[in-house]
Amino acid sequence: MKPDRIRFGDDVPRWLRVQCRRWFRLLLPDDWRLRVELQDADEMAAEHGDGTAAVTISLPTYLDAAIWFADDIQNRDDAWRTVAHELLHSKYQPITDLFRLAWDGRRKMPREDVAAMLADLIEQMIQRDVVVIAKLKGLP
Ligand SMILES: [Zn+2]
Image (cartoon, rainbow, N blue to C red; front, top):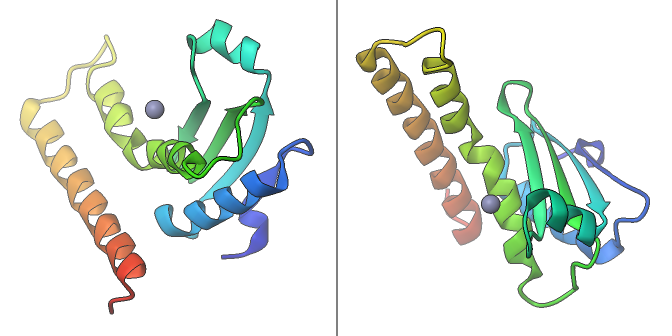
């Protein structure tokens, strides 16, 4: 992975950068790009609900994602869960995108076409999971 695949806002703490790099390397393919920023926690709660730790916007077509973490995020042992959770949103975003493409109000794609596209997506996701498992377990 080239280091410039992830860009950080100036105020993103070092420990969070380390976590983002570590989990990005494992969970997303190397051709993705990621931007990481902090957002005021109160502002985030007002926009997305109380207790929101982070928000991800993901554009799988462009292999581009951005994560905003609430600026009160704590460097605790389980902080990785928030980082991994947000990164995995990019993996699953294509399901939401397919739903929007298939039924966007004007158009309604045939059920069998959508089923075939969904089956393809699931195959890709399973393949990606196998890659992650191989990396985690050090298997060929
Ligand atoms: Zn979520």
